[in-house]
Image (cartoon, rainbow over all chains, first blue to last red; front, side, top):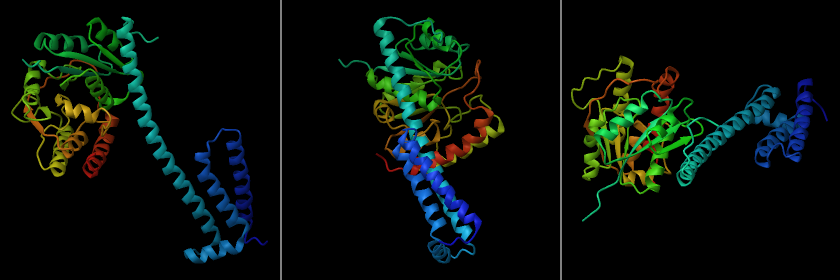
Length: 125
Length: 235
């Protein structure tokens, strides 16, 4: 196993460390499986690019990059962008779901108050 | 003998404790035959208490959802309680209930599905600040491009909606701001829009929904939402 630079080694080891941490988060149920997919893909890709130098060199040529390190950073950046977009989509959906629940709750409370004949004072409890 | 159509006036209210009582009073005096609903959109003042004192049915959002969110709650309520027509009217006193029948009549007579009470159709006293007028022109043009007809006052919150519109909008509401995007979406779904002239007054109290930050964000968001409403395949 040969490394082109110290940076490559740092990225490779960092990726392995991050992968282990992500898996541990899933194990402790702090991160749902759904969200772990992109993280695992990202860390595994970076680790492969870090340790398998022939693959990195081949990919760098394929993409027309000048430096191998650029390939690694480009991959990392691509994953970061994908993750951000994915989170934005999820946030939008959560927002819509949240709004629907809020509405449902408000309508239910209205029904309940009407049935019980209690309107309250309008003060926030 | 057919039963007369049931009309619900929905008043979205966000921190409107000062102007809400007068507005409710006025509607009751002007239009005794209609039912009222106040949608308190997460107010932190005595808006809910004011509605209760007036004995008006009240739905309270625990958090602020915005004008569109409040209106959609009105649509849900209107459907659940079997109303035929829903009128949207601002709490701040800008909308004179004297024009309620003007906005209501075209929907009741089946001449349209959405009737918009407009400041600009005829010469009414209203003069908006320049940046607002530019915005109005822009979104009027956007709506015209999208649906092929002119709606002068796309931001008017004084509107009447028929039951079919209520049915569609209770689940499928296109935007946070119920302005140009909503009109485009409704027209794209085959609903007939009509604009009638009404006079609007100065707001009595409280702040406009459109604060400074939103005034910058609003045009962008409204443009994007309008484009999307136009692109969406009608369900």
